[in-house]
Length: 381
Image (cartoon, rainbow, N blue to C red; front, side, top):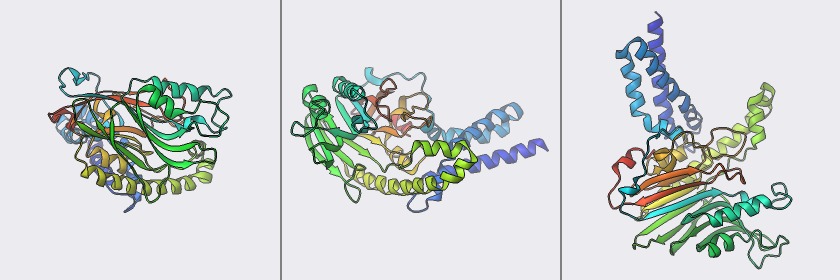
């Protein structure tokens, strides 16, 4: 009787897992409840693995079912918890051009009064770290710059284009969404030690801080690559409200419904935005590197659309969760890098030692290869 009940539970877990994977692929703008169901995928994956262990001790023949499901859904497991403890960098076998890429949401370098230090210490250190970083390409979201013509009283602290760009030997492309009365610039930026031969901005309906930009770069060997930098729709949810909502029943009743509404609006907007970008990606003939603040977790439609077409840097070579959010919400990875199949992923790192924003920077080394990396393609999710 107990074995029969356990088998029925195993079938339910398998069905739940497959349904959750199907929900991940449903655009939120078409049927938004599917996106909430997709968020249960980590629990279904974990329970399926638990079923494998249970049945290996009880009946190995029955264990074959959840084990097969675990094997087939392993790329989805890797999205949230990468397992590559024995990864060896492919640099020795790569014959192409190495490219060092860094991405960060810099939170406007803490320029607002509620964010800044008394002596602007975090702002100075962050900009200096980015300027001195050996990365060939730097992609920044929520960027802020004060050009020499800006009428501000902070001296040269926030002349970030000058420091991260020209002084560091990089060309700069700033996609500006706002220039205030003092002349200070807000938006996103790409800095490159390789020549920029083309550049462009992609707006979603209207140009806001949530948009995309790209550059075409000429590598020393003569190859041209395209780098995209984008910031999808923000969640528009205060961290304190989220923590309060699950810390008590009163908090859930008071703030839960409002959070759900805002989360839904964000899901719908991001599904439209990522579909807009995917259409662009499919028309590009160059090897691509993508840097993104997705504002979405690995079990979302936005992530799924990218992971189906590109290698995710962390999922391909990392080990662990790879959380990038610097706050009270644990295990949240919303900042990602993706690479088209022409690239080999050498290494990937989350810079937990740089705590100056609510996002930790990420960096990786990619090798452009003339041979399509089949091994990397298998771990592209």
